[in-house]
Length: 68
Image (cartoon, rainbow, N blue to C red):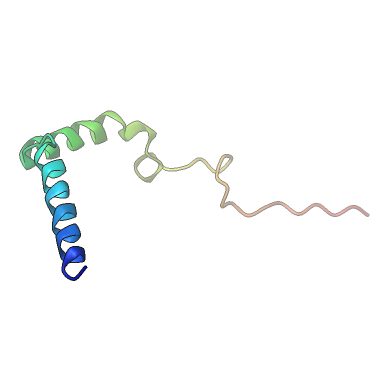
């Protein structure tokens, strides 16, 4: 049937628009405030801010032991 793929495509577009219309939207200012709060609350767990101790770092050079 000619044109049925066009109708199917439009039905999918309309279905997607209905899905998006039903989503809860958050203002950008509120989203940024929430992200800032989360980052500040979890800053003490962030190795980029606190650093990594040399004994727990997986990137430290491995010691080589040789037996005589």
